[in-house]
Amino acid sequence: GIGFCGSRKASAKGIDTVTDLADQLARREIAVVSGYAHGVDMAAHLAALNAGGNTIIVLPEGITHFRIKRDVKDAWDWNRVLVVSEFSPTMPWSAANAMRRNETICGLAKAMVVIEAGETGGTMEAGKSALEMKVPLFVAVYEGAPVSAVGNEILLERGGYPVKKSRVTMRGNIAAMLNVATESPTDVSSLQGSLRFV
Image (tube, rainbow, N blue to C red):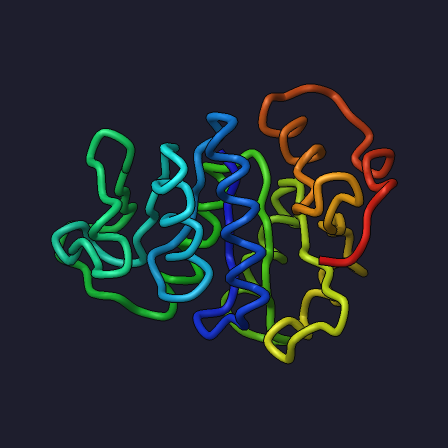
């Protein structure tokens, strides 16, 4: 699977980007792995389900707190959704659990994709966790980056790989993600040609 993280208050451009990337991956039988917050997380799960793919929801609380949210209710299919929690069944949500959960997403995924990161906060910490855990980190690059993505540049400077649109397909370029997900050896930097800003 490929992990996704980003702002709860993602821009329209961010939601379009995660929807495009998750859709493409799901159609190639790559599972989407993410949290269960509004914004980027929910858009990733919904895109995977709408594409007929599989998705993994990683909770920052005990499993007994889980409910199917309205955002994904119409696309829900228990044959294609896995809900997991590393916490005791009745443990409530907490910020500490959410940060720890980000590491679990990194551990379940072959790579992590940051859609929009602030300078601080959960998405930035998820990106740092991926880098520390040596999980390949892909970061959306925008022309005229939204305010909600100011941390993307920081993660790129720390070693994240840029995700841009393909000049050929005009969709997000997932070639490097596919290679990582299918364990094909690759030099990610060699796959960044023929790209333009998302």
